[in-house]
Amino acid sequence: MPYVPAPVSAGLRALSAVAPPLAVRVAARAFWYVGPPADVRPADRAVHDRARQGAVHVDGERVVTYRWGDPRAPTVLLVHGWKSRASRFAGLVTSLEAAGLGVVSFDGVAHGASSGRRMSALEHMAAIRAVHDAEGPFTAVVGHSLGALAAGLSLADGLPVDRFVSVAAMTGFDAIAESFLRLVGMPAGLHDRFCDHVERTFPGGVRDVRSRIDLVAHPVPERVATLLVQDDDDRMSLPTGAPLLHAAVPGSTLLTTRGLGHNRVLDDPAVVAAVVAHVTAPLPAVTP
Image (cartoon, rainbow, N blue to C red; front, side, top):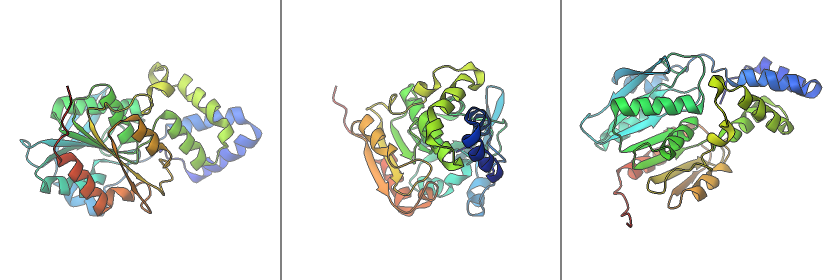
């Protein structure tokens, strides 16, 4: 979710009341502000430091990659969310290694140690493809928040992976905008006006982003074994989205948790165990 300082949020709420068009334009600029990169948490430092680092280039930006475990083993790709970084998966990395798997992750554009000033789901998808081409193939992909949205859309676009785990997924562009407006205190009545403005001014002149960045309309293929994890107390990726994703992917499994919120769900031992079990389970038989 875009980083918006408290004074900016207060200003947006005031503008929304007296000058809605100006509030929309200012909010659209704030929407792209990533803010300073997240630091590596002390609890994640040891895992972060022992990774084998590399890099790929995506649209002129340097994206830093990380690899753990035996490079000859089946490998899982981990995709972080907004204002996060690869090291945030440290607990899952350790458990996947213990299960005999290799692990690859990366810091998205404008995140962690990578270069850049802004990132959308489309840039995250481009990074996923570049990392796959450089470090793949992957047997599974695990995404969190915006990373789950980008990973799911990449699978819909043909990323050749057999298993997918979505943790606290954003369902699409409109869901991201809804959460952004709610968290900065702007009225829901400005939602469509805000979305239309961002779509018209989307970097690179990309068209139809509202329909293109939509994991319900462009679901994960049924052939991909899919686990969806959603916490009932998530204020970023609202719980109402998970059933929509579940219904869009026949055969998917929905795991619901409570009291973990948007980020702590990544650290929960039961969630980590469920993710490892999913990516190591035999694939179901496919009927010709």
